[in-house]
Amino acid sequence: MAGATAGPSETPMIVRRMRFGYPDSLKAWWNPSRREFSHMVNAASLAMPYLEPYLIETMRLAKAKIADPKLAAEIDLYIGQESTHFRQHQLFNRRLAAMGYAAVPAMEAALAADYAGFAAGKSFAFNLAYAEGFESMALAMGHFLIADRVDGDDAVGSLVLWHFVEEIEHKCVTYDVFDALDGRYWMRVWGFLRATTHIMARTRKGYRALLIEDGLWRSWRSRIALAAMLGRIALRLGPRMLRVLRPGYNPRQVKDPAWAIAWRRRHAEEADMSGTLDMRRIADPVPRMQGTP
Ligand SMILES: [Fe+2]
Ligand SMILES: [Fe+2]
Image (tube, rainbow, N blue to C red; front, side):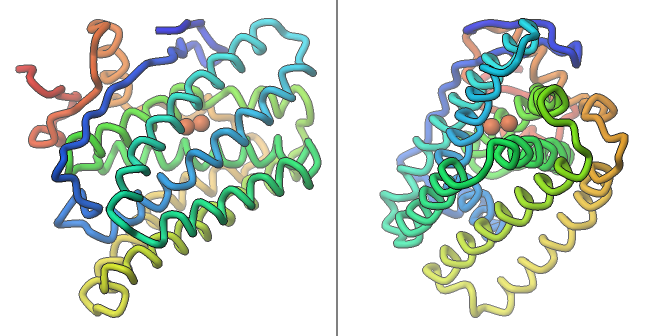
């Protein structure tokens, strides 16, 4: 634990050091019954080592302009959490790369160019609005992933769920920073729309390329499964995303899911927790860690 503070959300943020051990037998379809979903998560994971350093750099620049020491301390914790996220995703992404997918280096090159372009070519106001826009989407996505409970391989599911427990935990930071330094409603909405459409387009390109390499893109069964999954995501995520567009939106209004609160409590009780969940018991109302009753 690198540090904790009671944030404006009244939820203490903690930078956790996690250890997810992927089995030698790990497959890109780490959930064999949901291959399309596996590749959607894989594609999103490929973005993290480019997207999250961009968010971190934006928040570093923001910190220099923030006078409130409490908010500045929260930026440090936010940066600590995002740093561990992209490092853990990088470990997983290297495993995907080692499986020989040509889409992996191609996606990584495109994402590196995108975020280098945003950082160098866009205004600070845009980058700050993008950061808050992405975090608003990540909060909605976190609620969806926890309600649906990612399953499949223990380590991959645990990586994703830990990441989104912390996305929910730091839900207020970029909002508060945006509010302190900009606060324009239309700019917040623009950042949200831009971040959402950008990351969704990149993710779609990524899972499409991965499914093509697996010979699934032309399979009608796979396309039906993909359409059903996208429909479900749209249905579950839509109302949460629309809420972000309200002028009075504030992430504090979004109540944390009980499962995420239980995960955090579990971590606080067990200092050496690896974070690896037992996926056979993933539907339980509280997180069940591997090797525990
Ligand atoms: Fe993150
Ligand atoms: Fe985040």
